[in-house]
Length: 116
Image 1 (cartoon, rainbow, N blue to C red):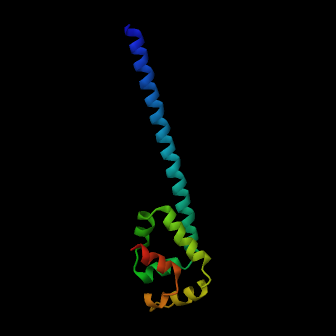
Image 2: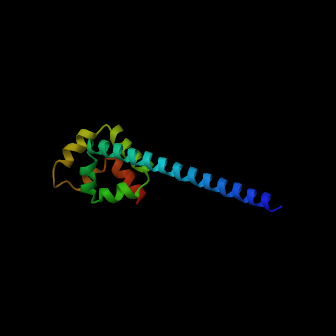
Image 3: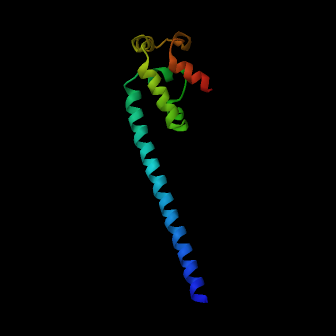
């Protein structure tokens, strides 16, 4: 009677170990996908007027980028990419004396203000 108990205990332990390995692998792949998506987002942000916008609004970009969910950062980038006023935004942000009130037309500013 002891052999079946040992066999059952072994099978349960083996199943739990396999399940643990699968969970770890899933999480590793998820982290890797998010890391690649964040790299892509950084490239898209660099090509947009968003760095100047964050500077003008006094938002630490690194804190925002790494503390916000990837989906929120992606939504912010999409707002900027789909905006029809990027030329106006770029010209205003090129002036170092631009005040954040000069950017009331910006959908990204409105989105960020609604989040805080």
